[in-house]
Each structure stands twice: as structure tokens, then as C-alpha cells.
Image 1 (spheres, rainbow, N blue to C red):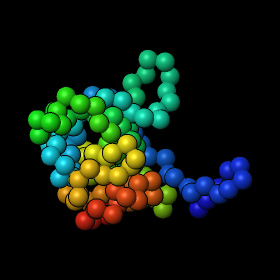
Image 2: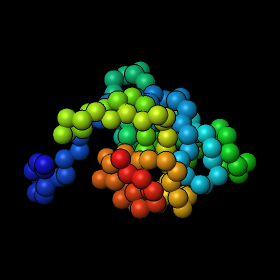
Image 3: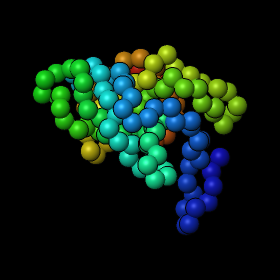
Image 4: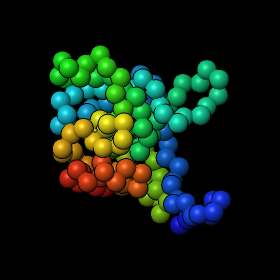
Length: 140
């Protein structure tokens, strides 16, 4: 499925229910040294005035490390959400839901900081972030 936008064709991205508000705690799913993350802002979120930003699978967020290596703590880093607990519907009609909320730390260019990803990853992330998908062990 694709739709024509301007001059080119844009890939169809399903609308994913956003289940992670600002302040949510996530598990870090890579081996970068961080264990727990907290969402600070959602990049690209457009909402109403004073409405709390929310993120879903495949969104890029700014996070801080709350548990993990000392050199990673108390810094604002970027991450991509790879799993969420809130169920969302895929275009083929199936519903998907994960056991936990998890993210992967990335560098500003979109390259993942770790070299391997623990646990499953949503298929929707592979469309937006192919470099992150390259280190995934299981794609659901």
C-alpha cells in the first residue's frame, strides 16, 4: 500500500496507538550499558497546547538513563521505541501487544549505540529504522 505525495510515492505507515506518555519508564533493549530509560520528549509530536506528548512503536524520543553505566546517566540521549504494552492494530487486521515497553539508544544519525538487541522487535520499526532492524535477533 502506498499513496502519492507530491512528486514521489511514500510508503504507507500504519497509525499506531501511542501508549507511552512523557515520563514513562522503558527497558533498554540493547547492550549499550543502559538498563532503564525515562522519556523526556517525543520528537515530531504535534499536539494541542499543554497536552502531554505520547510515543508509540517506531517513534524517536529523547530519554535519560535512570539505571545503567555512570557515564550514560544524567544525559539526554535519543532512542527508538521497539516494543509497547498498549495493543495496536496492523493494516491486515491483527492486533499486537508486547509484555513490556522497550527502546534502543541511537546516535544522532540513526545508528544504534549497541551491537545487539535483546528480545523481540515490532515489524513497524524495520520500515522506519533499517539500521536498528539489522541488530535485531527477532522481528515480530
